[in-house]
Image (tube, rainbow, N blue to C red; front, side, top):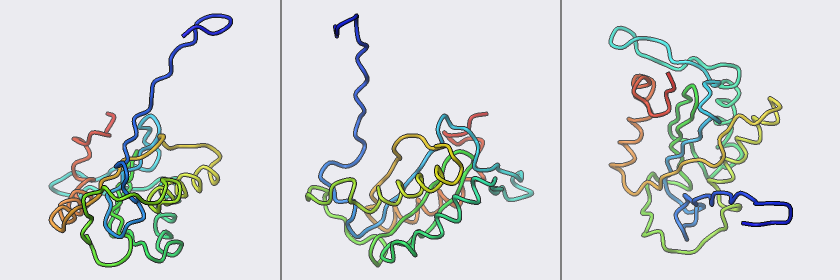
Length: 178
């Protein structure tokens, strides 16, 4: 693209990873992953060697603060529960339920709904990122986040197990950098 004074490099178009037309304020369950920028392992470390000791996350001061913020989510959003979560060295996994019984039928995702900025899941993620940035004076987070709308109870339990087992499988984790 030519602009006055030379060529301007075309910026990449960012792919929207949210399900188009889905209301992220709908009652139901969501699997959310939030990553640290450049996969820096600032949230803690995994200690313990399977099978003798069960590996677990030992949180840094950043991880401890993030943990406290996650535990406050249900107080800020009384219709939301964080059913299970794990803070890994460079990412977080959360299993979040909005409004009641686990895994209420989600439908086909074609209904229109709240704009992304008013939807609950994006609000929770934005709030978590904002609080840590304010507390520590720098933004440690990657832009955006990953989410999955959980469609049934079997998937809910599979993701629950994945979260529980994540520290034990850290060496094979796609986010592990070493």
